[in-house]
Length: 296
Image (cartoon, rainbow, N blue to C red; front, side, top):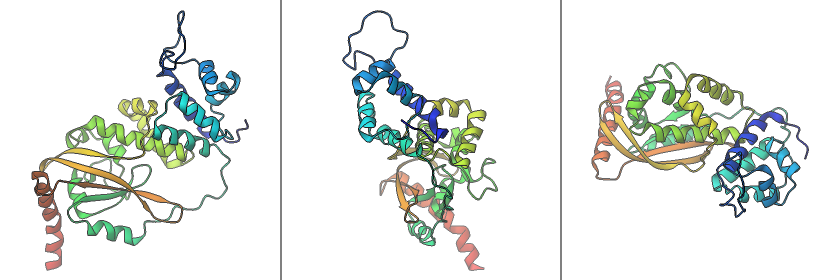
């Protein structure tokens, strides 16, 4: 099992050991006798259940994942009872451990038609983010809805304001997000998932390093190794002008080149609801400055 790229060994080690720790021998169908030093499965038990040698699995859990066959990864995922998103993350870790091609091309800018798409969505708040949760583009309603975010000292003056930095470093975020903990879980799991795909991205590593040092809440979530790919649900906002808004949101992938995608997050309200009326009010507020500017 060769390994030319040690960059993500710690991620592999911590992810596999944390998942092994949450499964008891009884859950895995193993006999339990005597005292155990660990609550979950031992490495040799995972190896037995996956059909590999104990030495081999120990080496895998130490982070030597490059070159591991898909069949073995599937067996380990089955034993550790990984869900679909955790399984994809494990395969992403294996892919990221392979020797990198030199000269990684520059990331393409957002095509103009992505902004056209956002601007055409007048009754939904829509923004495009990258894997670090940098905000790359918004429509007018998103800027109105996320006004506290764009006004924050953590984002002011930045051409790529970051949702995770705002969430963990601006105390006002706890007032703006009605369910701060749930949103925090989603944001960190999204960054963890993307970091698994590209562990050598310097900007992502810098952001994680900054927040790990500055925020115990971020550090705890980052060390949990939870991952999330398909993002949808409800968000509760406490907007300084519009008040409480309960909105549905979906995150979709938007292709920006033959090989790259960005994330489109759309917040909507049920038509005819009080939340839809508040969104409409926010939209009219957002449009008013532009209308006044055009009048002159």
